[in-house]
Length: 140
Image (cartoon, rainbow, N blue to C red; front, side):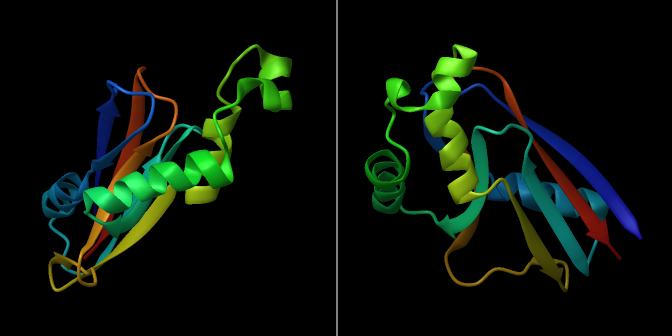
């Protein structure tokens, strides 16, 4: 079995951002030289996410609004985590839990095996500081 591991580092300009990392996932697959297998993509922080969806700015805005207004509003006084730790990022932890922190992308015939419009994204929910993602390609 062939493997290759890549680490991405992010230090976003905004507290919340969505970043398309599909090309990085493909580069890791290519570096491993796999034609059949999988690529694991995982956020290495509990206040960030990795997910598969459509690359469309309106959808990104909808995701950010959904997280803010329906899932975990950024209201530091509302969360026990914040009062117990002195942090203000409980909402980011809940957003990560909701969206998920990793995906597995199948590789078939030397290509990432996506459906139409699917791409891989890094979701930053508590940014403006250094964070990492691990990409691990495995297969033959």
